[in-house]
Length: 262
Image 1 (cartoon, helix red, strand yellow):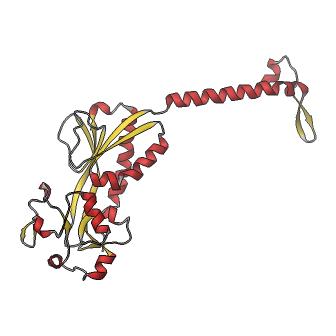
Image 2 (cartoon, helix red, strand yellow):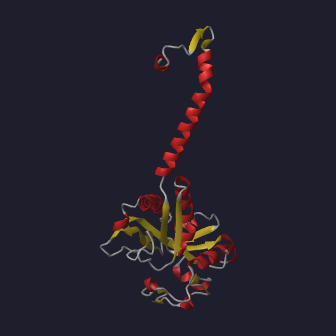
Image 3 (tube, helix red, strand yellow):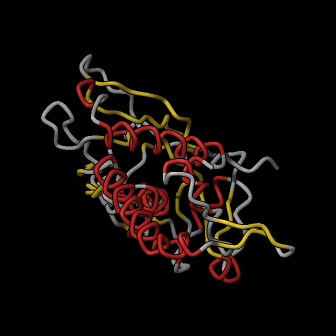
């Protein structure tokens, strides 16, 4: 053995019928060997800590994506990268990545600024849903016209992306909705509570067994989902790691969020 040669040929083990037995020299060296092993383990941990990803990543997303989809996604990132801190900014207004208001953004619109790096990760689909308890009290809508006899959950101030949408042959207006809330989480909570019929993402609806998709062939709404960061952030290790992590996770979410096949 190399160790025995380095000790001037002193034997460390002797052979017996039950295997190798340590000699007196080996027993004398045991405490020193254990101390060396412990020191080596400390060095390995120190090197690992020094090389582990550290820092803070600020993620921006819409209120509904940030509150309903990202928490589980970010949990797996924190488990894999315990020394990275995460800041989550929830707003339906796009964060200004040029001003570094956020490091990575989940958006439903493609950015136009050349200084931004963007990746399309899929498409998010939305449709009408209602709680089973609501449908026990009201007839199942078979046509879009039937919604006129239902409690519709929607907006007090109709957002710009719905300004050209027509309902019942007329432009969509606040009067269509009998339960109005401009907060997406408030609308979703109302649908879950059985207040009425409202629109939510199919991917979110599938997570709640009591939410029933309605009129899937008559109505659907979709947005392309993009991951965005500043070009200058590509070489920042924790930011790039978050971008890649979100790209994988949001691709999976989009793939499972399409309207029902039937």
